[in-house]
Length: 94
Image (tube, helix red, strand yellow):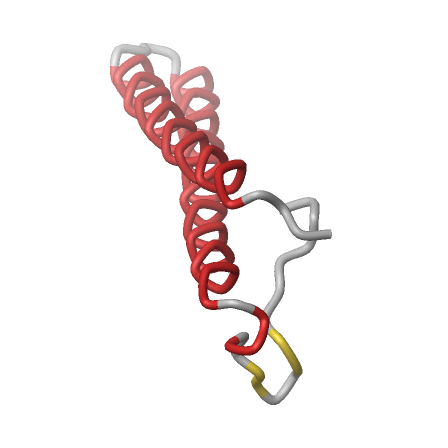
């Protein structure tokens, strides 16, 4: 099922916004952790900041995959990259 290129471009922009949001929350969690006196609570806050970092990385990866997908759609079906494992594609859930 082909998706409209405008919809993909909106998803690219949304993924970029989420990445920025997760990075902001990561920095905030680190700042809060730096102010903690209790080492256990500080460690928990640093764990939360690590989770935000992973979320940001996933959003950035999603953005990159969507950009590649949009470029492949714009090139057309005859120009999809056929590698050793077959055509490059993205599942609908990306």
